[in-house]
Amino acid sequence: MRQVYGAKELSDILGVSESKSYEYIRIMNSELKEKGFLTVRGKVPAAYVQERFFGVKAGETA
Image (cartoon, rainbow, N blue to C red; front, top):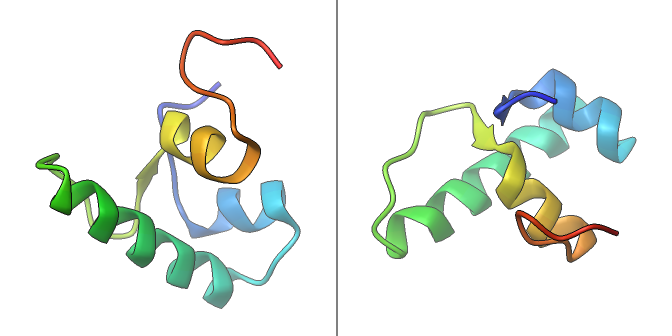
């Protein structure tokens, strides 16, 4: 599993368009910045995607 997802990977996982994926990435990166994390433009941590979309925190099993 990858550490970070770009818009293409996120669109494949969620079944949405790449433009919608970029919107989600901007939202999640904004949330992470508010929490004090460093972010990379156009990428989002895979663990945070799992938590926000599927309710699974790192280290938990679904």
